[in-house]
Length: 388
Image (cartoon, rainbow, N blue to C red; front, side, top):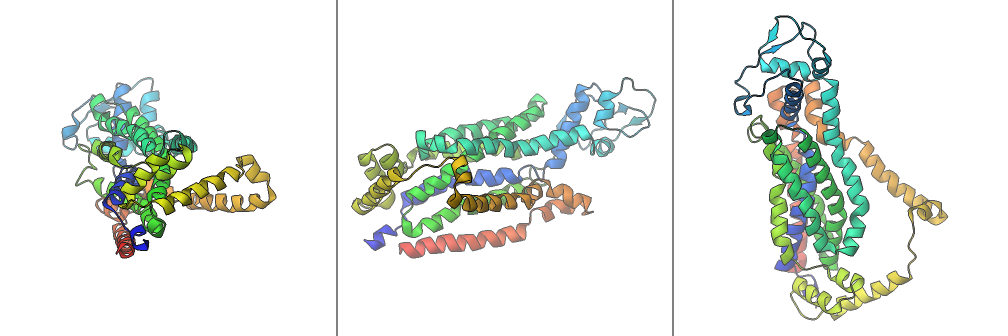
């Protein structure tokens, strides 16, 4: 029986892969999605602002690197803010090289604010999503909850594909808000789902796949965003539209995955359905031991007192553990890791790294590949080794 309990079945493997590909992978992907194509997207923002101010004629982005734009201006430094705030434009001096215009507007405060909102709104809505994830998990279930929130990411993918078509940078900001909402909701759901469908003996190995696919997602977004692929003036919307592909895969495949047996038994009191789901995941019929374990867990949970956030902070025995756990997570964020993920291309540029090298330095590809190989070796080797 011990060998059976350690067995990694096709249903268990399929359910794990679909869950982490449609959630963990997308979380990592969108952490780094704005990094490599940041320069070309910011140029798009600048052009939209100038066009709306009537100071730049709309042109075809397909030939942006070859086209020349004429713009009347004064001899003072050119910024988006000074353009928009000018009451009159005089003089015959013209800037005819678009790259020169892009260089002048690069440090504009309006543009900086808009780009900061684009980057930070992902985290803001991620926080909102994280607060609501437990309610979705308990009300709709782990599997149905993931299917439901995937619609947010699919909508985000569509919004990410159309900013050039409708000539609007606002849809990118909305896209990032939907992405953040999905990622905040999915982090708890996917972790909970994998933990509850995995046998105890390989739960750690399968649980590590969550973090593994976050890392793969970060690497993938940096690779996809290089200029030679999609990080250029013509194809950059694909970086954001790509979210629709894993979302579509999740929407199509997730309904074929079993629901968490623990949710069905403890939350919904559906013992027969929980047994069927467990049999699909384990590949054998004798579920009595695991069912009894979950029943014992359910009875213990009923006697455990639920603590509010206020009670965690005022109860002497819980105050210190809560503080340590909270500060550990806060310290991780204050280390600047999110700033590096989103702004490392600008950091390297300000440090004097040549533009044609930044995108390759920025990927940290050597470290990522080593990390991914190591994690794969652990996860696959450990899981298969226990299943043999």
